[in-house]
Length: 187
Image (cartoon, rainbow, N blue to C red; front, side, top):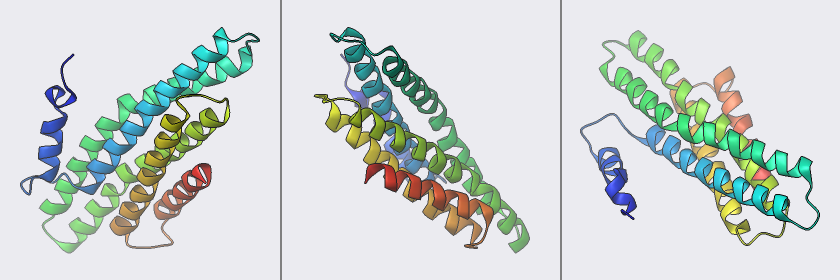
């Protein structure tokens, strides 16, 4: 099996660390959230398998775990595109020619981290549900997924606040609400 670094993770991290590109905290936040999604997807699938193979299968709970896994899969696939959207949005901020254009670009740049914060809240709640659904040997993986998601939600909210510059802005309020949901889910 090829190492993870051979699958371009090392390249993505090098681009993220580079001072030459617009990629910054929003990209890292989206990628961390995608990692949480992968762990939720994994643990939901493991839980569904354990529940389906158990002595007294619970079809509704099996289906719930499968549903959580499918949701996480969709987010895992979508979040790298959100990272790219964040990089593009921040590039527009850097290229803004005047203060009005910069303000407008910052408002648009708030959308990708808001997307991450809201996705992360869903993932944190799913991870908590998976961890609580059984006495799994992979429970620490679900808990780690929840903590990664909660950190992603908090980081996303921080970035939205920075971009909109107004605590009363509806985007900032939504991002903070998502971060709070994720925080509550992970205790």
